[in-house]
Image (spheres, rainbow, N blue to C red):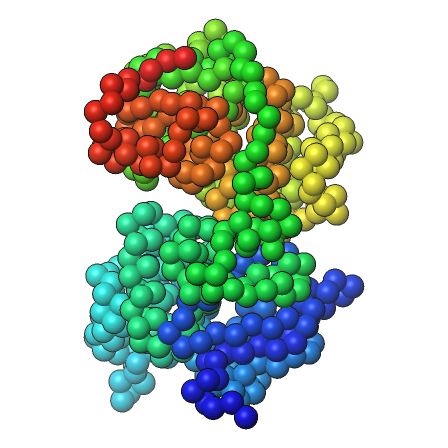
Length: 511
């Protein structure tokens, strides 16, 4: 029998789960050591979420065992999970925004006086102590909903730490964080690792996984594929394990031949951005790169009429475009998928069909009546184009995976046949397989003569899918380059303002 010192902190063996006829997990195994960050990767539908729900006590396994320190445990409820020192920080935060930070931290075990009355002073003092354990300088009296997503996430982590969690699962923890918030999260992960906590890290971001993790395990289609130490495995190896394809192939496309200028922007400025000058041609993909806060998203919102511009001229096919709001921009041939698809792009409780058809209903109206049959036929065609399951047509869009939600947001503009497409972080929070399909769609749209403006913080993506790069800093375009000649280092030099003097044109060299 192995010595206890050799036992992993957590081991899952032969875990199987069926949902009706669907085999979600097929005898998978996974182990986690104390003081380790173990990444769990796989496409949407690979079984990661199901395994974590089993570990959290939200779903019951059909077969298999869960062991802590070599001893089998039974996790039939979230309470059982907490009892065994297992905590999960979900991508969708499990908090109450209307309550204060202190109230959220005390939820379920509120301190009481001897008379049974809530002891608010003690609750706030305990909250300060919990936040101090992770060096989070958050006022415990603030309403949780007034904090950024990153700070709300810190509150959840503080709660897990206060409950002496030995196993902490982080599910896409940086998907909605700023760079500064992500760096703070990385520091907390380092503290927890040093304290002997085992962390399971679920992320689609390769660079993040390689920065943080000690080992990585890959699932595919509900089965275990393999585990490797980060020093013995490459990102390309992991992608091949996930989808059977090298990472370089994700960005591969034949050379494109851009046509006439479709989008012509001169002196565009507004709150947080500008003035900027640039063009996008028919059949061209132009990517705006830069750090968070550089003004990339603000430029997209100004173009789409979501924010009011102060100065500037925008031409679409040589016609002036000055939309007062997004509906006017849509009428002028623009479409936009914003970076926050859940709050800004989709109506989560409405059906997939309604979400896709929303911006094109005017094209299916006769005498004031919507031709619903034609709408459904047109929506179905776009769903097939994007490999969305047709049986999802009537489902609320919140029931879809992150990748399929993004496809639904894109399908809206395919149906509208928009001339100019603005895609802000189009692959954020989606798996490798969905990324590949989105990249192929972007290439297809360009080849169909669309002008595509992509805003991305993923530098390999920005370089790999575009024809030209516009690097932004402090609200201005500070450098423009052909993507074929670009390197990540050069982009970062310009984005941070540390580029060597090389004679390159600044602020809006125009093609």
